[in-house]
Figure 1 (tube, rainbow, N blue to C red):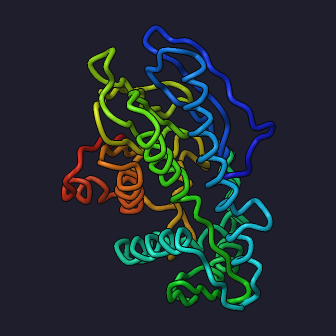
Figure 2 (figure 1 turned 180 degrees about the horizontal axis):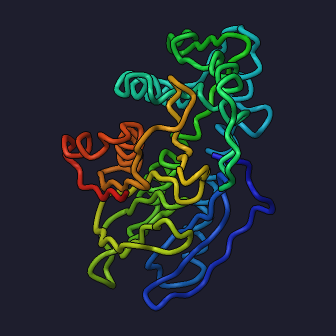
Figure 3 (figure 1 turned 30 degrees about the vertical axis):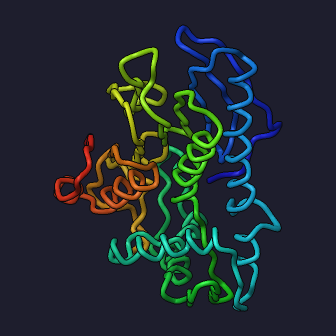
Length: 300
């Protein structure tokens, strides 16, 4: 998740088969596709989705002051008591840490201090990486629900979970308010409330290496899709491409990671978990994906 881009407003436009609502949240373009009969109904549904996206952003973005993440990151070694929603996300992060053999680590966000994936050829030195890496390590803290204690120089970043969680949360809200078929898309992570009525399936374009250009179309009737990759964030040095997917055990980009992994699953959170863990496997991504029960698309 990233800082929001004000102002917080939405736009609605008519499509041949429904409506498209758009807004910005979590540093990403967000969309709601719905088959509502009227513009006012589409706007109401988009307002519900946008409000939930902004709520999740306000609560969990590391860029905002005064929220639970800020309280944890500024606690200076003191324990912080968290609410149930935050505790559930921390439990999930703890599970991913174990499943990934410590390669998924929500304390690794501090590595941004030495890595800037802007497409240039500027690499940090090993000394710079090692200095910041000393502040990384989920097990250096103590998580006993509902209390988290981190060493004074460490912090957490839930950006690796936030968008997928927000998508699933928005879909649940929509299901509680309408039977209208909807697709929720937050920066390429998406889920549907069910199959569309005015077409055979939802057609979803998955972005390739060229930003903004889809290199495959996926027909989706139920469930969710999530994509992990380096189409937009990377470094190039002497012909070598350095992905923004960092190994928090070394502080360096994962070697031989795919350019992108897209996974279809029942929920966006599940799809995001599998796609992220696959990227962290590097050269063994396809071996990991073949062992899962979900459909995937992997591009190198």
